[in-house]
Image (cartoon, rainbow, N blue to C red; front, side, top):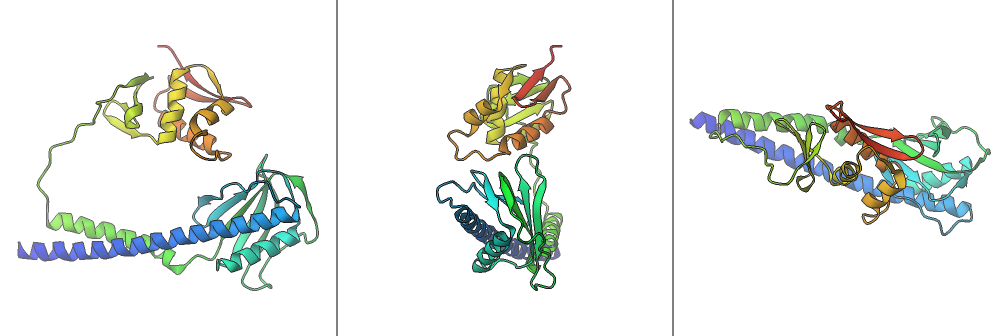
Length: 288
């Protein structure tokens, strides 16, 4: 028993240390993301000023994935690649961001790459084509991917493994009393959706013994659909109902949440979230 306690407390100490290190990594990543957002907005502002535009909005910077971010604008702009290279480099330098990155300028309509380049620490390794050629006035998205990642981030998976192993060892060597099996709560009123039961007040769907959690936006969207089965709901109507009082509606957010809902409802072939091209979406419900 004494040896078990030693193993338990040793594992617990390792777990606590791992958690502290992971928290430090997380805080560092949050600061990194905040600095990147500021730098991109600064670059966006300077690009608008080169277009003699001091009034239109720079839309919220999106973090697409680890080390990849997107800058977008309210209005169409003309982009001079030479100015873009200089503006981005200076904004990143002021924020002390990595100097090794790739920039892609994409057309909003089809996401085709209109211009791209790669910046390295040394000019010799940088790849900057199409000098002097202006991109015509269009809606553009500017995406940056940092290629130089802090060494600390590469060790993060190792600490996650250490944390998991440590916690597992703690439970193995110091088992807890068995608890009674918890029963899924279904206190709220449910709405039938095919073979699912929809609990909007509890942010979930249930099917048989399975519980599927929903985000707040997914609940709001699904509520609109179940109230209007087999009816086309326009994109504008969905956007207004779900995002009107919750901040700025960002371009592809609706499509993203629809895709998530579609996956969560995919186990039932009798219901289907259909995209009605150029109009909106419809929840198709087949009558049995």
